[in-house]
Image (cartoon, rainbow, N blue to C red; front, top):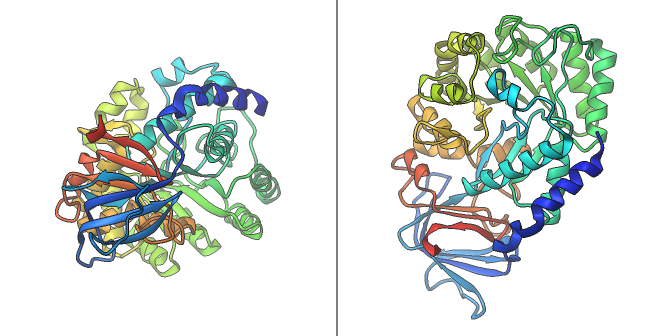
Length: 427
């Protein structure tokens, strides 16, 4: 991969795109209701004062001094919550079928442009932080740098580089040799970290998108799993494991894995083990449920893919319900682009709604989309809630999400780092 191709493409994206996003200055959001993620009473008729990219004050109107030069945003009739977070995003997502055929032969520059376009849409949808657990050709690392420099618009990105694939495993191509054995996988993990990855993604079981190997089958050996976790943790990186297998997940939890992705068929025993160990689950329930089937029809998924997806739907649902019952740490993730249309809303919002349908309270579902992912990332000192000193990543809703999580469907204002990227009422 030639990183210059990505930089050139991203610079093209930057031209004209940033015109609508002025540098963060002093902004006062006035009259809104600040939702308390701790379960306490909401702060009504509030003022949230933003200085630069951080929140400098929060209080009832009349208790916060608003500087004369501050730009005022009328938040009356709106509920203010932290920017949403999505912990399972593939910016360069390519799924089998028509989608793969259309993107065959995609160049580095085209991939960078596609990712940058997705990043802008993600931010517009109210998602201000994402984690990319395995993406393509390290383009998301280049995009992250471009966003942080202010060259491009998009969410904060916590990247894992490219996923570590084993020969014949999930994500592999027939006949192609990948990293196998503890030594090769250790070297592969170190390579991703050296390129800037803060997470390492391993694929320890079968999956929906690979035609071969049962989804609940443990494919990576205990020695391989332990080697990657040890290597990553030595460098201060965290490890995410794609898993639909209780047996493989049990080994990974013992090894000290940080998060388990999907968890399609996890049983109560391993979920209790995850709870005890503090291991995170990123459910991506939206990919396996009937209400989101039109997405897969839209991208032209082949029948074998649909059959694999449908085969785990009920098991996946029961695993999520059991994880909630067992009080497993849950951070929202979709395995679709966060803004992807699903069941009349976005994938991110529909994922949160599924959590409530599976047994969470609206408060817990909102936390799973905000402060809980921040905790998983180790970034809760700077993001995930509305508090003085934290990043001014703020979303406004037209309804109370603690009364109905479906209020997330009414997002009409998005601020990230003190910059307003969307304000429907100002149009």
